[in-house]
Length: 157
Image 1 (tube, helix red, strand yellow):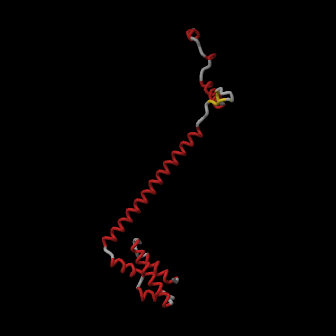
Image 2 (cartoon, one colour):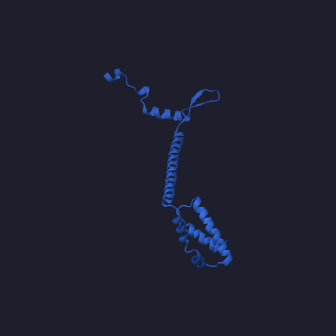
Image 3 (cartoon, one colour):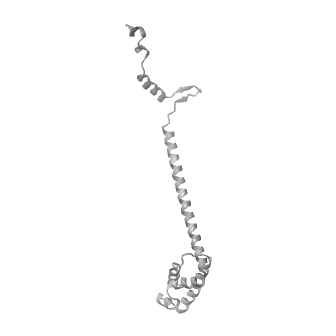
């Protein structure tokens, strides 16, 4: 099939809102007869095809004039529901992925911020970690030491 015939068929396909099994059969028949015509006449321009077969939308008109309207409406509604289902599925997957990524990030941040309070030496003894010692030093600055505590006798005097 030459390039002009292929372009004509692709233009005709654009006028079909849904291309199902029956539409494919019809287009295959038309493309077969179109190919034979192009080979016999050595077609070099689309004007000759337009004169013989009409504009590309005529192919779709001829097909739809032979098909019941209710069948076409059923196919259009079915594809509409399929598209809605696929879009909904994509949205649900996107939301689930967003929730998972957020949960993973929060968990990862929490693990990174978590301090190890105690570590074990090779003998299995639990020893305070360096961070724990520093934390104890900071605490001791905030509390009153035993030497600074005033007894009741000193307060009365």
